[in-house]
Length: 276
Image (cartoon, rainbow, N blue to C red):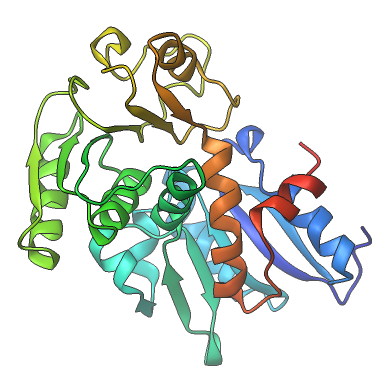
């Protein structure tokens, strides 16, 4: 693809950029349809977010941003307008620059996860789910599982107050949802989600004991460092179905494109053209 003075930029902001897969998916698609837009990785640590993000959002050729770890929660305070998904999840992974420079935020993490469930033949309605990690991505997945009719939801986080706050927001929006906080024991759940960064580094511990998984349950991953993470390999050996971080990523990109007002496509077409 060619980048010139007319190119519109979608910033992919977070840290570390070495795990970013989106530029290798979006940019081949944009080139294929002749759209002069580019996704550009920008490495921003959490401690630099308050200084860096407002500057990025003021750049005249930036139309929006993909917000990834560790900035999804902090960016919410910078929004002029937040979607219901952001309000419930308490996190934002999509920012667009609206009329007059207004900063408009949305979250498609959970939508991507639930779309991937459907692609994998899993109906979350009335199922039981354990979400380990109540940060930006875990909160979004929990919110979308709630909207999809999940029967019961258990939230786990090393910061118990964060899990409890998410449970309270979910209960406020869905009073009939059975939501609890608890230990990271995956036994007897239909859907188990690792929504933590564990798995990004080779020496990371597993987020929970895979020997406690019920064979036949679905184990979902958000980590993109490798497609079959140690957790997913252990889950598959246990007889579980697995959903990779890439499954979720490819399913959320059409929703991102719609949010940015760009021509959208299917996850199948994106997979066929990706240069991973």
